[in-house]
Structures are given as structure tokens and as C-alpha cells.
Image (cartoon, rainbow over all chains, first blue to last red; front, side):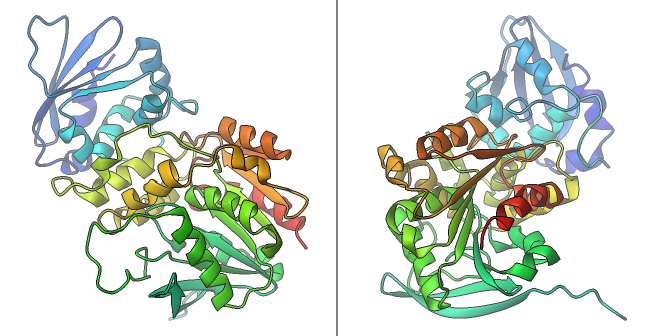
Length: 124
Length: 279
């Protein structure tokens, strides 16, 4: 579900430039799976699919799989179009040290939205 | 070289608000019924550029947009410091009334978005006879915090980046990317702590409970329009508000929290019929 984050992101230098000083590791959690995403200088180096025994990560984004699927639609419905919208509906939880996420909020929003079939935003 | 000039003119003036001098910047265009527009939290009057350029509106209305103190080109007061800004309901009302009185506007229409959509409810409760009509964009009676707003003003997080990131998500995925970017850019240019300071009004001090029932639509017509993609003031919350007042609301398709700037073309389709009703 999120394995392609690395492939998509590496094609996009402008997105990486938005987070050129960011080195972090975070987890995207669905009901069924977990994905460990490793970012170096704004570039997604790799995505590992769980289960994990002792994953080291800084923060976690946790939502049921059906909510992630709604987020990843070509044109998401209201309330599913943004991670803060999902937070507002209490279907997504932010956990852990949120500093990397909040200090690069737009970057993470665009990174996740990059998995939508056809993106409704600028790309370089 | 010939340039394409816009009909907008800008001006500065000194206004006394609650006994303190503030240097305020405003822009205006058009002639006729005064239409004062209130920008959202953490942004400035540039959000209303499309209205200030809309020929149809300018034939009937004098559109006036001021930057709130601390926002856009309006200055903070003298002898203050960074981190000292917190918008209260009383101060918000005072600045609007000072501006209207300063420009000697008689029975203007006031249209506000987000925090502006909230304050028009306070105006409707307290001064219904002062206005020709009130228009609320993204209005809700109250809002409980749903994220930690302390992230909006921390020295270890770039305020422009985080405020822009928050604003971006409030817009519809269907809105034009160039308009969304500019709307976000306004947020990225806000001063430190200003968006957060405005949200004190939006999420705490300006919340209205049962007082909504005091609004009498026969004294001053109220119009409520909300974008379907807004998760801050949702269409459901505006509907609840409208039901309490006893009026209809308009749910705007394909727009989010900043209809006038994120997708002005779509927004004007909804606004024109409302303005046609006002004489």
C-alpha cells in the first residue's frame, strides 16, 4: 500500500528539497500492516513492510486501512483529503515525537498524496 | 510596455482601537453599498483580490478589505513584543467598528470568512441595526481544538512552513493549484504567533453557545455559505447554526476553507446570487 513511497518520491527532487535537512524514520500503520519509512535528506530511502519485532521509529501515523484507502483516492471526499482532516474525524492518530512531522507538515502531506493515482497538485 | 492595471487602491490610516493607535492598511474598489470583507486567521486582505476585481460586484458595491492589526501591511501597536498577540472577541469587534466608523460607512454589509465568519455572528447578536446584511463564510458557532495549536508558534519550527502546511490541507483537492499556492503563501508570510493568536478567538474566546438564539434575522439578514471540503467549520456545523437562526445555508461544492481565494471562480457563482438580494 505504501511501498511505492520511495519510488514516487525519488522521482521528485522538488519534494526532497522541501525537507533537505530532514532525516527521520516513521511508521504508517493500517489495521493489517505497518510500513517503516526511512527518510534521508528529504529522500525516501526505503519502505519496509511489517510485521516488526522491535521497530525503531520517531513517530507513527495510525489509521484503519479503509481510511487510508479513502485518502489515497484520485479525488478524495471531504474529510479524507488531508491528514489533519482525518485527525479531526478521529480516524487518524499521530503518535510519538511529532517534531519532524510538524516542522515538515506540507512535505509529509504532499509525500502521502503522491500515492494518489493522478495527483491534483503541482509536480516537478 | 502596457501593463494590466487592477481597479484596486490601497491606503494607510491611523485608527484608535480601544484607546490605542493602530496603523491600518486597507484596499478598496467599486462604488455603492459598502461591503467590508474580513480575512481569515493568520492571513490578510489579499484573500479578497478576486472580489476587488469583479466588475459585476464593483458596479453595485464598494468593496473594502482591511488587514487586521499585526496582519499583512497593518502594523502591531507601539511598545509591544513578539508573542504578545492574542485576539479576543472584544478586540476583534472593536477593530471592525473602529474601521467602519473611521471610514464613516453607513450600514455596510460585512462579510467574513472563518474567524470573520464567527465574528459576524457576534455582530449580529450585538449590533444588528448597524448592518445592512451580514455574510458568513465558513461560519460555525464554536470549534473545539482538534490539533495542538502550540505547533504554530515554536522557535524550533519555522512558523511560515507549519502555518502554510495547515492552511494547505484546509483547501479542496479540486481547487486550482495556483490559487491554493497563493492562499498558502499568505499564511507563510504571517508574523510569528499571529495565526496562533487568532485561533485563541476561534477556538476559545469567540465560541458562542446558546447566545446564537439571540440572532434575529429580521433585524439584519444573515447569509451563510460553507465549502464542502472545510473540516474546520464543516457544512454540517454551519447547517446546525443556520437551523438555530432559522435560515437556509449554502453548501459550496469543490471549495474548502478559503473559497474567495482558493477557488474564486467557483465561489463567485455562489456569492453573486447572495449579493443580488442585498439592496
